[in-house]
Image (cartoon, rainbow over the protein chains, first blue to last red):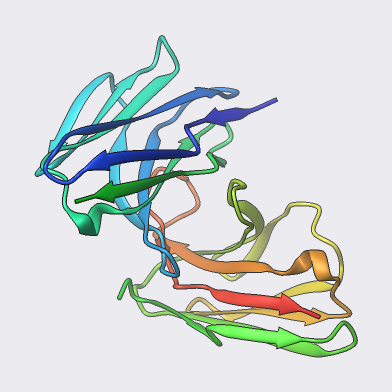
Length: 109
Length: 114
């Protein structure tokens, strides 16, 4: 079967750095997305990785290792507004999006 | 604002009611999706429309009936639902169905079946 694993919940401190991991076992791979979803709101696109390596976009970076079936989202200089759920999703060989259950990130002052 | 609008935002319905969820996008996208989001579970893809044609129905019970009258609008008709159908229903659109283009989501309809 196809599976995406990410931690259910993480807590971090304002101003710090946090890394949210995502591991996947899918039938093929055509890319990986990270989305952010604030409570009661729409998921919004953060990043897309299809090649190995680090993609940096401001305070957020996303890393991919296809050989390890692993990605992480790195958030720097955490702000209270970063409290949200972070969803990892993988495109399989049939171009189906397989979603993780999301990681709820709690930022404390 | 993501460019995808869903109405209503909240809906409470009895098990014998009939209601419809509406989704609208003016992003010029060709693919539209209905997802079900339950607490602490992955997003569940329900239906996919590509160029107004339904291309996927992921074993969704017949009490959920989608309709796509044009490339900008998508409906989900609901009838004789069960309490376990209570969830957040999200509509999304993307440029195409290849999957490697980002999806834009609406804010969802929070459905409660009583």
